[in-house]
Image 1 (cartoon, rainbow, N blue to C red):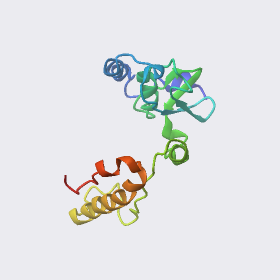
Image 2: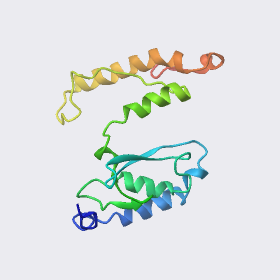
Image 3: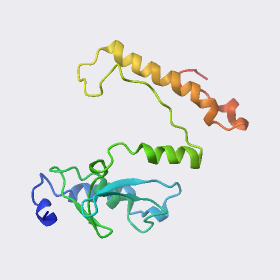
Image 4: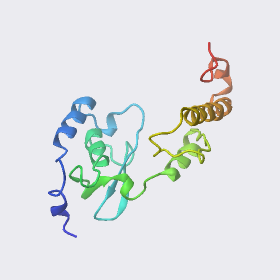
Length: 165
């Protein structure tokens, strides 16, 4: 595959998006973040996902990683970074659940699972009742999960969504 030709078969270069992201992040690198963030892109050369983070790639500008992750095929040109040709991370792993599960066990984050099999996120004409059911189910599951997430010394300060003050 001629990766150089891919960059010429797109709707836009992505240069304006990169400039916007650089301005919005003040050119910060992952090393300068107070809280670690992970941005995922897919490397066309290795056919694997690449994770940009404080630990993995501290000197990469957040804006460049975000721009690489936004490289949706045909829309934006790929991004050459870290020795690879990067596109949207979904090209390799559209739903990085394993990464979230690892965060769950390592950092105390909690994944709230909400069954939504009765609705489609692609339904542009979803009935209001179905949408309200989705919101209600999400709120109920989150309310149940909050006491598990909040440290015991802070439980009194936690107010579940919709519970009022």
